[in-house]
Length: 94
Image 1 (tube, rainbow, N blue to C red):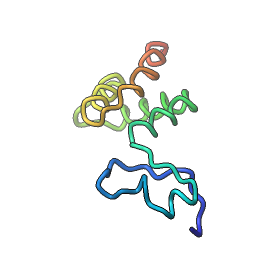
Image 2 (image 1 turned 180 degrees about the vertical axis):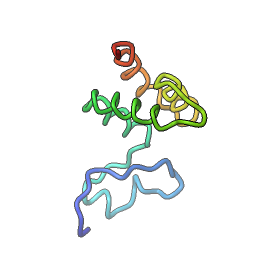
Image 3 (image 1 turned 45 degrees about the vertical axis):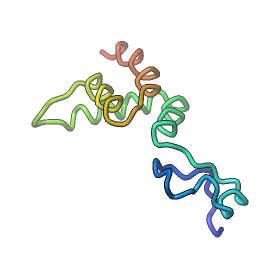
Image 4 (image 1 turned 135 degrees about the vertical axis):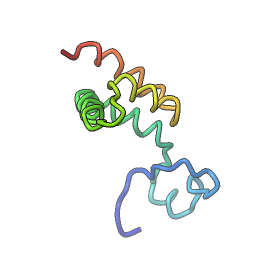
């Protein structure tokens, strides 16, 4: 491999990436998007909150609170862990 990546984020289990010889040899982990998001949010709590607030402010046609966006992330993408991490922090917003 030319570039060095620690992980490939995908939910495509059919591709067989977790057992691909080149990735195994390069020690590249295959991570599901919901796990990657949870790890990222856990490492950068305030950035996760800021991202939800920014998304909320962009929604002008159908306004959504950050909590509603979290609900959608859980419903559509199985990001329960992201919601568990961020929801308590949202209650601290002014």
